Amino acid sequence: MNLSNSLDNALNRPILDLDKPYLVIDILDNNKVINQYKYLSTAHKAKNRLDNIYGGYRYSVRSVQTIQHWS
Image 1 (cartoon, one colour):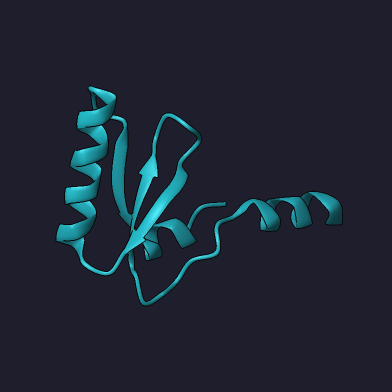
Image 2 (cartoon, one colour):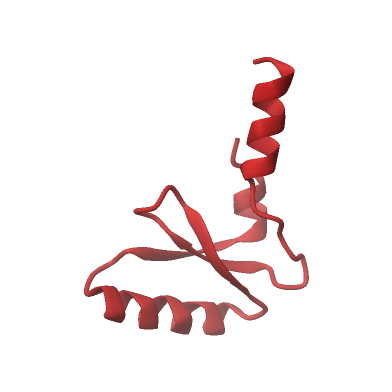
């Protein structure tokens, strides 16, 4: 991996707010971060609302620590 690939990968990662440790992600759109939430219960409510709009299981809740381990 050269420097330009490393830079491109770093620029494509979301900027995460550590005060909001829970993320709602779109698992069908290459794990795109939809929004961040402070509480796990709020994140699950948002995920369920988005899943109901979509009509199936498309969204997931993950913690920031899990996201930081992506390469």
